[in-house]
Length: 238
Ligand code: ADE
Image 1: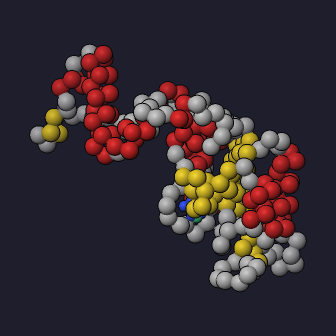
Image 2: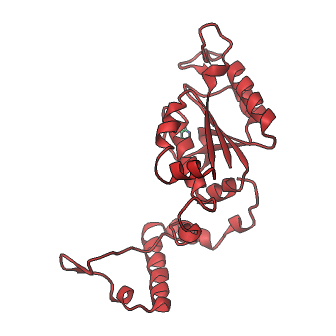
Image 3: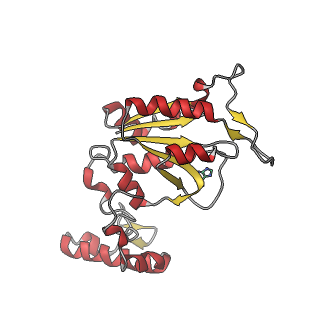
């Protein structure tokens, strides 16, 4: 998968996305993460990338010219790119959207700064507007990294064992069961007996029950969703 990121701060990606599982996947060539500096496309003699908003008001808007030129240059090499703009106004991100995006060959993540970007760039170029939650950050870089991390780990070969996300929270629509490791008695707190039994059928049943119990307790909204899984019919659109 190729991920092009349009940003004013490309260095943020090279450091944070160069470590651990994502760094390894990049080294193996499973994912290509390509941060592109929007400023490099500015034709302004001072390399400016922001401008005043029509109608007045506080804050600045990212200039159209560098954004347009950057998007044009990316998409002429990669046809059928999905262009995601990170914005608090977007659709709230979740595991289901991560799964859909993980099937894309070419992804462009557009990170806004200042007050955002011109609506006409959104109308002309953007295929999806995504928010990572109901709070406002100073830019789209951290949200872009959240998307990259969650998408990349769903691509076969990125995690050590390709099934390792199957049991996780949200994959099945439920929260994950609790984990335990040695010692079996930790300061008087014991590991549930069943996990020491070696009976994998009973262990699976216990884990499923625990998942259901924890989900009912913490996220009853997820249980309600399980009974109207419209996502099952959801194909490519997020
Ligand atoms: N940019 C600023 N805040 C954001 C958010 N919550 N999600 C996505 N992009 C953003």
